[in-house]
Length: 537
Ligand SMILES: NC(=O)C1=CN([C@@H]2O[C@H](COP(=O)(O)OP(=O)(O)OC[C@H]3O[C@@H](n4cnc5c(N)ncnc54)[C@H](OP(=O)(O)O)[C@@H]3O)[C@@H](O)[C@H]2O)C=CC1
Ligand SMILES: CC(=O)C(=O)O
Ligand SMILES: [Mg+2]
Image (cartoon, rainbow, N blue to C red; front, side, top):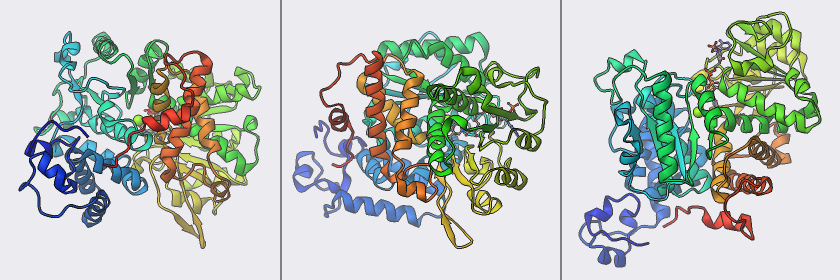
């Protein structure tokens, strides 16, 4: 470790600070004598102090604040805690608590993290980007805060999402923290409550829209390309029409992806693959019904089409296996209210309500991505159970309050038959004396590994093949023991290894496709392992 500062500056530099873990020699060297209490403790003991501190807090938002202050104070200790206790800590730094943290972002704002761009920066984004202190940014997560989880337009308060996603990049895939850049494209908000709140810290105007909006995003993308030409841009939580416009504009030219469309697709497809090991239904025969026809659901369907085609189905046959229901009922031909991404799935059929549609289509799998809690009612789950020995139910909406149904409801209403996964975590459920462990169908299982693979090989772009290979790799890592327990995903505590395996597969595929700009290392797995950030002192 190279530290140039002395004394208090060392202790207030989160990147290097070890606090009471500084040894006698280090205290002498960095001018810390007299500035710390006598005892020198190990990082293990510091981890224990933090975990004890978390237990003493009475709410998750207080735990979020404790961890966020730790992140500022001592980066390595923060990542040791997150890496070692990922199952306990992920629900705090990520969904569901990050939803609450975003709502309260302005109120709880203490120390800045990340980069803010507003319409006032037009023409100067490149210049102000020079204020960012790091030279080697590799991963950028950017949002404009218009669709934060299922919570709607949270404006600049949505900054909690890029921060949380990048924390997962470092903890789950070992990206180096100084190579991460959270970005808030603060183009205003249409949320009147925020605009009326004197504590709101964002750009206090209505959202920039149309041409001007896309020009600002374009200037940002160009500025990043110039300053950090190897950086991956992850678009996150944009409103669906903008999410698609931006993805279609940049996906072939820039190293980027939309996590809600493509990351979610990979994690859901992985769960679908795994479900076939439980139900015994061949993948190509699966009929899937989506509730919600936005970016998350359509992204999944589009990747499933590619997966079906790999199994020999034609594009048209693949589309026919996938059915959507939205607020206005079954998505069918001739409906005048559909968006472009819905059209391939608007089949010739009479228009029906959700429950009638389940009866008519008889899906094996139900995937909810509505952003509306409770939309999988008891009747819906009972209908799915009447049609299937083992109905597969994904309630993907976040945070927990927006889940289409809870884990407990899925198991109770299906009399223990449902194979269930949700976007936000649920605890184990005991139903009629049997223990059920719900899976977490969240893109957090895949985006860190996909991003790691893409930056390691310096991919030109991220085509669908890379998401397909990520999905397959993850599903192959679900153990027989997990499958026997009805789980669709491996245990979260294995996430670092899962991300490594996904990264290897993604980079390998990029080399095979000829889109990797870096030379292929002799031993790709070792090369990636050697790169990965280790939070131990
Ligand atoms: N688990 C995971 O990894 C991920 C989960 N998500 C979650 O998915 C949710 C949706 O995100 P996204 O697709 O981007 O949002 P969108 O707003 O694009 O999509 C929501 C869709 O649901 C429809 N809808 C709303 N209410 C109902 C209802 N009562 N019945 C049927 N359909 C309804 C909407 O119709 P209309 O437009 O007509 O209102 C729209 O088609 C969010 O909660 C988000 O947190 C997203 C990404 C990843
Ligand atoms: C998980 C995620 O990306 C979302 O809910 O938007
Ligand atoms: Mg998202």
